Length: 64
Image (tube, rainbow, N blue to C red; front, side, top):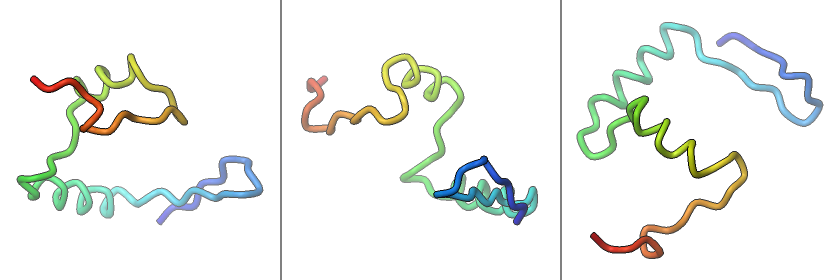
């Protein structure tokens, strides 16, 4: 894994290599019950939540 410093003393982020990232993505895509989000889904949620915001629980959402 490539080590990338984000100029923080408390945390160092280690990014996966391209090969590791492909393996992670393939594993996620093979799980029919928990597919990765699409770009459209990410764009939709970004409009409403910022980093650090508390996400609502499913039970708090109105039923369809």
